[in-house]
Image 1 (cartoon, rainbow, N blue to C red):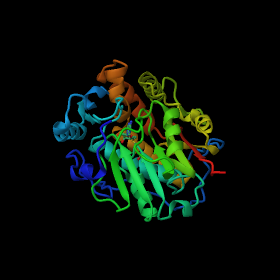
Image 2 (cartoon, protein in one colour):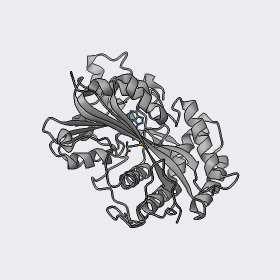
Image 3 (cartoon, rainbow, N blue to C red):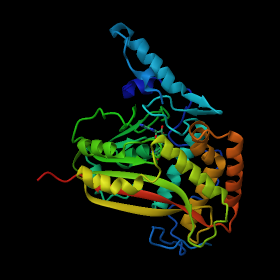
Image 4 (cartoon, rainbow, N blue to C red):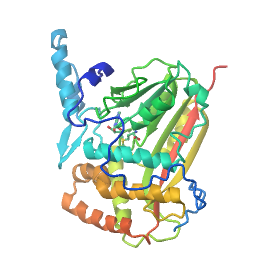
Length: 377
Ligand SMILES: C[S@@+](CC[C@H](N)C(=O)[O-])C[C@H]1O[C@@H](n2cnc3c(N)ncnc32)[C@H](O)[C@@H]1O
């Protein structure tokens, strides 16, 4: 595994993504709605009707002796930073499997928008696992964020718990330079053996790792090993199949077809998109207790009655219309399903039209599962 120290990574940031701590968007397209509990606010958990208004051989160190180590390292670093270009988008070069989504500036903006959307969806919470603030706020507390992306969640957690060390790990070096002093980023593949001590973390968190992780039971088992007794894991992901409570999805829907293709592609990659439905059982099998699923409806478009969910829906709509479909599907459709870009664009054009149609009330599920490593007897 090509493991670089945080200091090496920090000293040699990629040219791909010079970023500042506070993500800059040219315009703030929507009223965020955070904190505004409207009288029309509504529950959006699964039980409630939602009312309308890669080749790893290049990373082995075989054939390199001690004296070659630094050039070996710098060639890895340069490859990791450069990424791989496919159909005009840049994808991570590091990691034992190929990852389906890009790592360019457009994707990073999308990542930050997603964070805002999820926080709002969860009523301004960064996580839902019932972890006492005291457990995460101690001097010796440690948090690990898997597949941290732009590191926006890790940075927010580091700000919230300034005494706590927050480590964000990702195969792509897309994190900002200026971060809270208690926030560290590392480049690593979370599907490899984790380089941390056992019983080390208070919280292991992973959000939106679809097509990033193939072997969930192994990842969950590693989290168990590296969590302290009493520590928590929380995994969260969107399950992207379009649903509707009021049958407003049109027949021959482009949006539904796009979702079906995405499921097929992920299945072929060995990373099925319905994996979150198995997390609870996998956590129990690993030894976790207090395991719970929480499933939220994530509206597509500003159609729900609740102001908060309208904002969430608007963010989801912007995110998908502004390159989200391509981010999720372009590489997989062309390389895994063997399709042509032109055909994909036809399906996506149809899907975009539906997404903009206010009479179509679709949502997807945002699935969260958490559990606690038992206290020592
Ligand atoms: C959709 S982004 C989610 C980012 C972040 N978790 C969030 O919610 O803001 C998925 C991230 O996982 C990273 N990733 C993919 N495969 C990975 C792997 N095997 N190990 C570590 N990171 C990985 C990608 O580079 C990308 O940054």
